[in-house]
Image 1 (cartoon, helix red, strand yellow):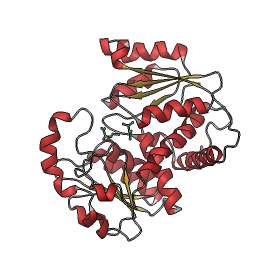
Image 2: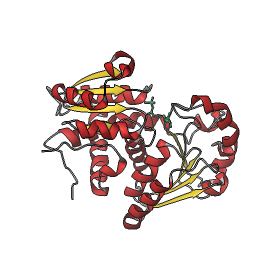
Image 3: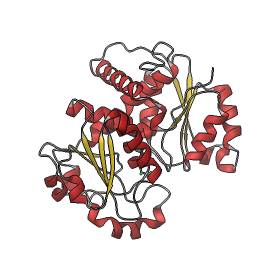
Length: 317
Ligand code: CP
Ligand code: NVA
């Protein structure tokens, strides 16, 4: 049997995504109530490969694997042969002989895809330059627990049309969300992603819209979202981007334009007074630490979905 991977948000169907979010909620409640938890990864190991820095993803996957009864092994390029040029394919083949799944954070999406093509165990994308699908699952869990639903919810994303924006567009479309992205000209999400999101949205009721005016995009939003202006790997562009992105800061004016009960999200790490004002990030509408917490629950659900025979394929059509 070929392994089931999670390389892109759309590797799940709408119904699988919904079932996975239900499982994430159950796992959250079990942990909160300190009920005995199932340990579907007992006796199994998961490699966590980081070619870029990480706090949340690294820690939440490590804890997720351990709480499911498995053994997490974290490696980074600096301390492995990946940093000395060993190919992704050889690494995938070797790791497949040791571990039951591979989680990888890297640069080009192509490296994630090549890892999956050469691995015989499930591969999970823990962020690439193109997408951040694990983040989007936790974000959807967060929105659903606060708003009570996902279909028809309007999420306005301000800033760079980056990996986080791409995953919000694709995962949001599967869930029937209306995702409005306001970016400076030249920094919009890539067209193919927007088109794909709209194709999915034609079935789910979702919508993907790219705009250039932050306040116009925020009007009537249920959720306001932003991310860093310069992503990992773009550090030399930080200063030039800071100028271009000024009009897209998520501040009190933007919050005023949204619905009165709008929530504020950020995948973190955040730069106060850059992409988001400190007052908004630390204010009463901010749910950023719920988002961060839900990484753990959503990823436990994902690992269970991919690796636990008793829940694997839950929600499959
Ligand atoms: N949001 C997120 O992925 O954070 P880390 O870079 O700390 O993993
Ligand atoms: N867009 C950011 C997300 C960090 C979690 C980056 O890629 O650096």
